[in-house]
Length: 308
Image (tube, rainbow, N blue to C red; front, side, top):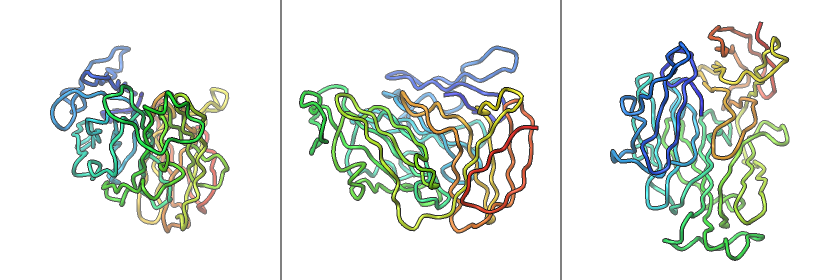
């Protein structure tokens, strides 16, 4: 995935490498890149070893204004949550974040951060599915999954963020998403019905695609942003970053739909605002490095922002 990993407003490249150390190619701003994963803490997992790195998701999980990176691994490994602090330096904080406390273990692939209950903190979801039959699959197997592939089926998982970057496994209560097993691979997020709540599309091997509509009760307020470049035919401003100020808090996100695994997500940035009924201001860092500030207004709507 491409994003700014060192805070210089130039896009870098993170490579999730299966069975080998991850790589991070830092943009030197002259058409060349330098590989710096080890020095930036992104090469190895919390045990100091390479892992079967699969899907990736990026979000500010603890509200400090810095993007944090989640990477899925095999069933017999723990996943990695690389928290960023200070800027440009990461460390795998999977245990302090509570993500080692799981109702079950799985081989993770597609993964997304999204604020499903709009409380202002991005939650975490990921698809699971075995790649080899060293372990038995989960049961019950979802309807429509071919019996041969059912041996590799595992249940997807969902974790709620408490707002400080600590997560709680709520998968057992999510029967539609996590109640039955499939050979999960791709997972994409987007507000399918434009009600302000992120929905999920889960794609497996050997079974039907599943569309999971978000029906979380007592959701907070929200804002969606489409960032457009009129000089380029109103293309989505891929790589732009946005900071939404509302209710005394700042919410950061980067416009990069090409995350997860074999997926592309809704290019509209979604921000959960909790109890805030209005937005104070929006600051956009455009892909060319220029900054622009926009006025806010009422929450619970989609705003189209174009670069001047």
